[in-house]
Amino acid sequence: MQRPKIDNNNHLLTVEIPSDIYIKLLEMVKETGKTESELVIQGLQQVLGKFDRFDLNFDINKDAQDRLVDLEISLEKKLKQYVENLISDRFASKEFKEFRERSPNSALADNRANIKNNLPPPTIRSLQIGDRVLILEPDSAYYMEKLLVVHTSLLRATVATETGEMTFLKRDLRFVESTQ
Image (cartoon, rainbow, N blue to C red; front, side, top):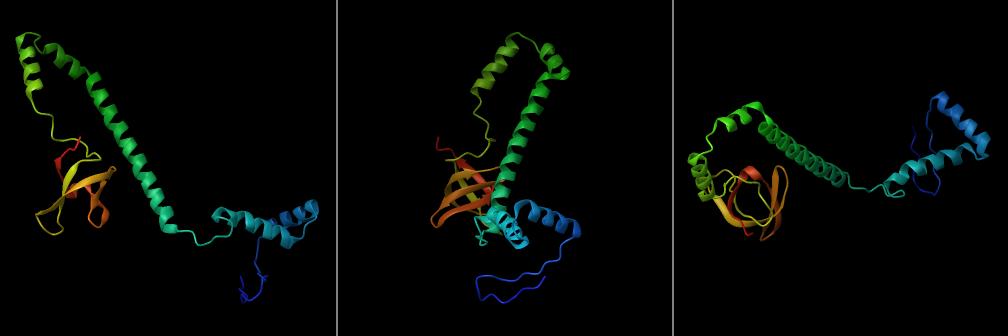
């Protein structure tokens, strides 16, 4: 392919194409009455139309980030569905039913229910928007200031800082309190 100097409105472009494509191009010339150049220009306009009508300055990084966000959301949904299926399968299993049948239905079961009601809620839960967290300082065992979570995903959480929003891996965060 040769590239001429860009100094006028029309440019000459020489491209080698396979003979079967050229035969199809000639058939289109006969059917439409347009010239070969007009049909090639029309095809290029359709292809380049995908990029906002000749705006070739599209942001590849933004497109890749959008795909990563979509991938992360779909992974999060699949993981949630997988865990729910595991739990429902576990409750439907034979061993769980046999264990339930073997457990006494007397005062011991009532005692267990009382103990269960008196226990504090579990400390392991998914990080939610509005939670306060501490961020692990890089290369240190100490945590930085207490910050508010503004967005969460499967692996990362975004917190509001003095300089703006910053995203961290959840493993680097320590849950402090819930604002809800």
